[in-house]
Length: 594
Image 1 (cartoon, helix red, strand yellow):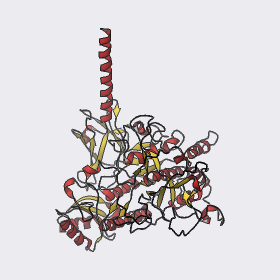
Image 2 (image 1 turned 90 degrees about the vertical axis):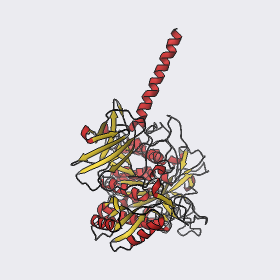
Image 3 (image 1 turned 180 degrees about the vertical axis):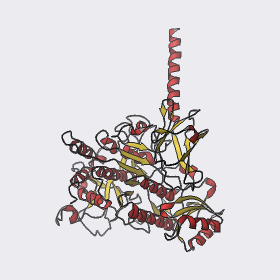
Image 4 (image 1 turned 135 degrees about the vertical axis):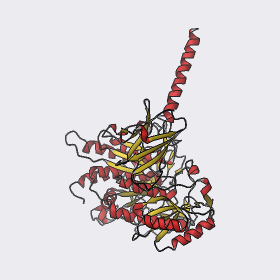
């Protein structure tokens, strides 16, 4: 009898445990977007989607730590409609029910928003690429009032305005087109308008499919090789954290540090992973911790989870260790915002970037990029991943140019860190590759390296690492970093699959820049690049400024980057990230930038 009762009691406890965890896991925000009248400047409406199985009844919605009045929140099954009016600041929004809290998503009050196509609104073009049939964006010449002109064009062509990026004078139109022939005819007519600088078409998957697609406009490869800590050691990852702890947080002479906000253009993060489960609810209850905001993913090994994990994952818990988490309780508050606006391809990436910059982001992490159809790798073979047609590339190039012009004019303090790409091609040729080919002080391009077979080499030896075979190269690449990391997992203390690519080298550089800015927020993008290069270790063959095989891994190190020593052994070599030395030079820059 006792055994029977014990078994029943144990079964009940197990059932309660399962119900408790299933209930908690269902309280997740999977999607958030602007909806309603996008031109209403007095009232802003947002539509929020919860995971299946979300608890019934009223939910408490919190924005910037304060509960929203029930009258501002409407619910229909797993959908919430939030209406905000008056002066409202951008910030994290999350859901609470009983004692449980959801992940926090960054709600931007910025006016840049575009919509994605559904499966009914796409088709295959002549290159076999999925392209939008009835959604395009027009970039209006700056001498025109963008909204007024967009409305005139919409009326003239029987279209409707469904999205916009006002700072870039860019407006998204839904055209009366049922096929690509009709779309291309309208695009040709729109492009001939005197007021139109360019027309941007999207070549990306429809929204429903894109949410299940891996990776998300990113550059990633999988390998069965097992990297160990030497991948991060190659960039002095742990030495950088130790330097900060010993030299900037000492009890005898603590240095003042400054909070920095980082934007990651990615789709989502799996908050069920131990890497990120600590970020549920009100993350900013502590002024000295890293906070992560983003939509919830279905799987822990998503592209966004891996990229975000390099910056924000809890140490040694769910597969990854986040660089910025290493400064908790001894540094400033880092905000890491994972945001992509919508699944509307490159246009959405730019819309999200504009909103984040207006919300105070100093460092943007772009672990994405595209190649033109027909691009060849360094071996002369065609690249068949992340390619776009010439028509799409021309529009993207104009949109990116407008973004960087706006950045230079309005936000010269912001720095963008972009992956060089994994096409084994040339990152700096604008006819082949975007956006890494842009020449601007506010764009830093990152290549990828991995541990060499030379186990006797010291960390500062050029032979300690080798270029990752797939990494794009040439003089437009500013620096290389470790390309291979563990993905996140659902089980604590279990290492995940290995992901490799320049996507994962990029956040190592972005995180380093964020910490450098926390030390000295007055550093400009040009000075940040200079300090990165001055602090860099080396990688690659013997010094050669013009190698016959065009195998420049990065822009070669110059004598001016080695105290004008013409015969310094580093001169002419390619650059490899040294995170510790970069922080050291940032401290020195408080008195002068050498």
